[in-house]
Length: 413
Image (cartoon, rainbow, N blue to C red):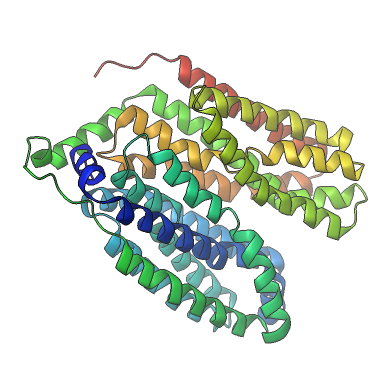
């Protein structure tokens, strides 16, 4: 996945092949997130009842899944840079399908944790990070934002599609048979699309010195990122933002119901976050024609901070709650789309997946653990005001980090 390969692929690989890959990844990302992640929230209570376990213990299995995926981000990134995505994503899809079947048969909480750990590992092999790495290898910088946007827009509706579908299946089939149905959907769609559609870009017509030193290029690019203060500033900013968004996603329903809103309204308002994430991605793509990506992202993060800090004052009414949720939701998925642009603009494409894996690991860990820290705040009597203040502070830190990154001089090569 080198720059030289990328140029050749864009000139000779064929427009049809590139957009077939985008369409395939849009479908597989939607199905993957829907079955491996979003369905869990709907399955949680039926599983807890069947396994005679607390919802806290069952929720912990999802946290274990996310953490397992985070730990795999770095080695998977290295594999993608060296070998491409076809074999990895196909094997991940097959294994994830088998694990969905195994999930339907768990009898103890220990078995659930084991299966969910495996699903976290396979998720790292088939979801956004490998999909983005494949797209980066096939598209030149002028086409790349459109391709990434197409995948994230479609996948942004994963929760909208699969959470109601899972609820409907549970109502008619029970949670175990529902998982078998989800396994069938996952296997029938993702395995053939990954196996038959994902390709490595064709090599240059004539070998060049650059093409003959792929490993050297990857090592140099990865080393550049490791020694670049701007990379670590970006990582810190995205850790803060990931902690904020995951905390709101988990605890917003509880906050709104604590303000006297019906549970149905609270769930509907929280469901807006997924739809609004698509809006935020569209805003980023349109605005980046006129403004630097870091400026746009910092502004959106600041809007999120203002929205969440205003929630104690506006959240008592339905209109106020919807307005503030909208302000926060605009930035809900923007980091996914901004990250490839920020990394490739600075470090190129030779080691994109390796560098993205190094970034994704701590950010994913923050997303997984922040809701647990938020729950601790609530259980120790801190209350929702302290929790919202902490989320707002994280958004401010994220916005500040983006601005500091932009102002930090680029180190010499």
